[in-house]
Length: 402
Image 1 (spheres, rainbow, N blue to C red):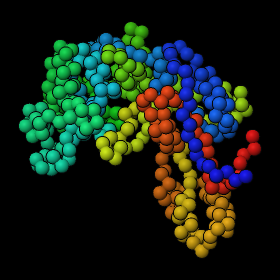
Image 2 (image 1 turned 45 degrees about the vertical axis):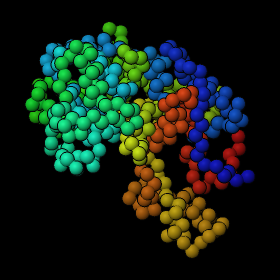
Image 3 (image 1 turned 120 degrees about the vertical axis):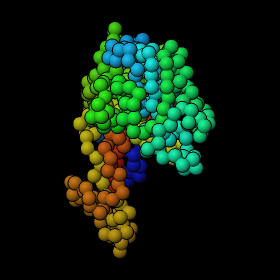
Image 4 (image 1 turned 180 degrees about the vertical axis):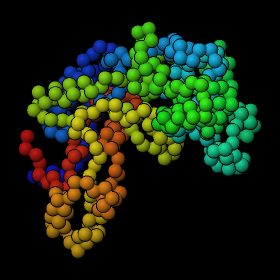
């Protein structure tokens, strides 16, 4: 019987994960139990993906605002501190800001505009056009911003982030000044000590500031990159990738993830004989067309994955073959011709016309986005995603014997 289904993504329910749980064992058992309950078989080259949130939770990788404050004070002292380019997020940055403000005496908060780096808007581009403002060159004080644009609330959250962040800072008994600019070097007119909150542009921003003569530049990846008084930490990413846990604590991005994916892979192999691939995933890398928000607020989509997930897809465009190479064929003859072409395609199709439009992104970024959309961030209760058939192609015409 022909196999008529391609890629399938299933959210897998698990018990609620707690600190100290053997996550790998729970994932293996949950996937196998789901296959029995829903009457599907596991196959080699299936992908098991686990959200970073439950990995960090099992690790107990948490920190509170006092830990953050201690590290900020230890690394900057009592100088006026420039906090630049944070994303506008109650979940991602607000608790971090509580800790940063608690560890500082004065903060000059410099926000990028019209939006942060992941697309959360402070002002619409059309409003900038109407007011004759060039965001690449013009620097706005808070007063000028209010005169031009008033009080604007985020379309999804209903929050005025300038007011919200100011309140967080002043509630910590910290003085605050707000400016809006897109050249990171402008902060040096206010202070030579900078905490760079850029996520994906952090390396360039640090370099520009250091070249311009800043006395000390650290990033969020330099805060809590080691343990403070027994806190969690992440040696590679620090506070990057953290999420709100409580009103005074954050769950950090997980660390030491390779042993987790390898143990899951080995557990499935031992119990089923199937060689699956495994990855940890965070935010997917996709953009919302309405709110213009780019979802990726984590430093990477996947902090760890097994070796079979290295690289990019190497695919041909079926409609290109049908419309060009085999335009005169149809039916079974067309199917045979395309099948034979795929089986004999080059090992590297980069730059080849036949591969145009096939999304040459990393496998982990593509699969991580699929997983993030499947599991969601709400109450689905499926922190594990099983993907089957992802590495199939048009040549897979018969069901695999199991």
